[in-house]
Image (tube, rainbow, N blue to C red; front, side, top):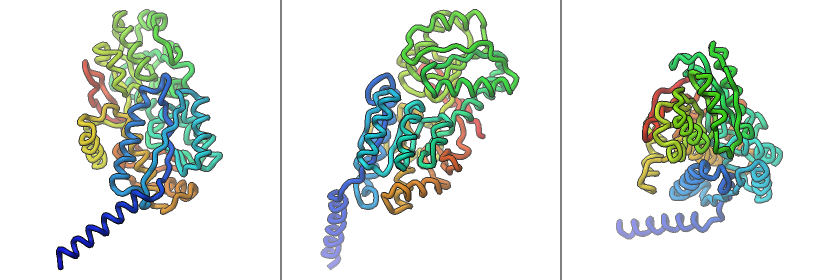
Length: 375
């Protein structure tokens, strides 16, 4: 009798599993760069979103239905980002994950806000992103604190009294960080002796670096991305420039070392996460990732996108609905969500409260955790 009962139960479980698999999928859009200059830096975020959706589906899906991930390519441009957002609206998705770069999220957010579709970005740190409206959320800390933390670190920890700031003239992310760092650094008592600029496709930084070599600042703040950061610091080393370079979360990509190599040693940047943090969800994520890919998570900002997906699914479950307004309301009410990058409680703007900034030090072959700065 027990064996027959066990067979019946097993059959019922199998039927429920098949039912969930056969159910109509829930379409969720993710907007990232698959082509263009941002594609390499966005790739770990795309992978992490796919990884998290697969994990959810393996656990039975969402509301008894599998998630179907629709990745829309923003083609690394503001125009492409707007087109991708309009496509998401046309598809009638209940929510959107992305984008990665702040300049892209700033184009996506107004369109999704107008359509009243919730959006959660992982790594877009520009303060303006969530100020666009009450349907826009993020899992990362914002640039105002990231810049302030690095200014504090430069002045108090490194004893730097003079700084040069180099910004990407056509990237909102870089321009905002450069402005915020300069303001905060000067409030601490430091002096910004030069502000220079370059474009996001620049490959030759000789003219800027000649000025750096002449002025000999204590630090150079470069809030750029992995490619330009690697090239710039490598060229600085070839010119025997001795100053310390500082950066932001845009540096956190393996491409930095692919390009910069040993020249990166001794410099610092701010980040959102590190492999050594002890959050339970981080430990779980690393275990699941290793089981699938047999490697460590290569991009220390990528877990922000994992948290974005998990936060969205948590909100949908709490709302018990795919109605966009109910999902938005559930997101806004998020308190104490245990994410891989830390605990998330949203403020009135859709920004996480009190997430620490991690300071990373670049070694010969890889960055290492240096310290955390708490708000």
